[in-house]
Amino acid sequence: MEYKISELVSKSNTPKSTILYYIKEGLLPSAKKLKSNVHRYNDEHVELIKYIKYMKDEMGSTNEQLKLTLQQKNNSFSSSYTMLEPLMNTLSGNEINSRHYSKDEFIIHFDIDTELLSTLLDDDILMPISKNDYTQKEASIINLIENFMEVGVEYTIVKEYVKQAKILAKLEHEMQKQLCAVRSEENFSVLWKIMFDTLFKTKEYIFNRSTYKVLFKALKDEIDNK
Image 1 (tube, rainbow, N blue to C red):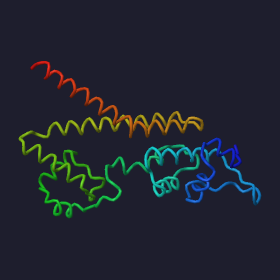
Image 2 (image 1 turned 180 degrees about the horizontal axis):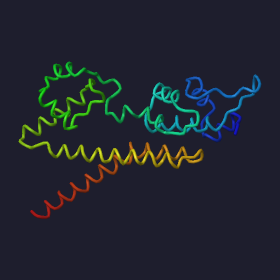
Image 3 (image 1 turned 135 degrees about the vertical axis):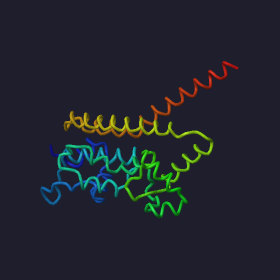
Image 4 (image 1 turned 45 degrees about the horizontal axis):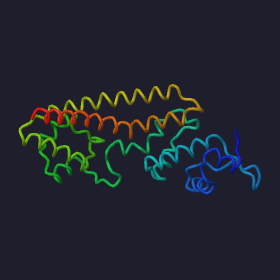
């Protein structure tokens, strides 16, 4: 369907000034120009506005991140994989302004034990984003393992932690595939919100609350047994 700007404002619940700003910034395609003063928008504009607002308000995505994603999308939004692109840096755990090191630079800068580094890489405890790309995050994990070793505790439990994380990642990928499989023009806004909310909101809630319950019970049992 085609819409006047007033209809697009109503349908997307977004002020005209915001819509024109999105167009100016290259986040939305320009309207179809019928005459010099007659412009028409379509359902793609509605969907894009919902996506842009969600990503900005809920996920803190920048214009530049969104531009990159929207330039890569296919015309029909048939897959939400490219729509996840602005969140990939968040998933990586690397902050935007993180300093990156080659492996050799990393070893020297953080005075890393090369044998320990090799072991952690083999055990998948350490997972740099690419083979020769290290940050402070990797140094923090190595420091954690060194602390385990310092107090005389094997890091086998950390390996199990990683194993469970990989199982969860596969479940999240399966969820993504199932959501894409039932996609329609009518439900797409809901589908990608489900995925994003699961990855960045619900997961934190479920994991932290589960940990809270286990630790709370342990604390209660300890108090009751005194």
